[in-house]
Amino acid sequence: KDGVAKYGIKNPVFKPSPITPNYKDYLIFEGISVDEQGKQHYLDVHIAYRQACLNAIEYLKKFGYSGAQAYSILGTAPCQGHISGVVDVPNACATLWLPTEIFDFDIMPSSAGPIKHIKGDIQMPLSQDK
Image (cartoon, rainbow, N blue to C red):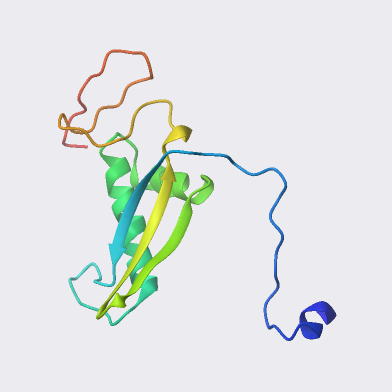
């Protein structure tokens, strides 16, 4: 507490761990400040980031994960969240960067649609009703 007061800040500062995940490939989900009911919110990055997360969850559900499993992946994986733009009035834009290397199958979009396979196995399209 004394250190925070000495530097004139209200919240703590952190030093990252020396053990840093080193991912090079991400799938990036975007959200803007329009809520689930379609209401526009003026430069609201909270809603924009929530929309990016909801987009990622819906995407992962197409690969057979439940909503709870997809939410757990986003809560435990070394994702990156970015405020990507607050100049496109009235929209704020936020992005969620999901490292693709944490999956043992390819999650990149393709013309065939969501395909879940173990790397090196035959690709089988997933049922679209999940």
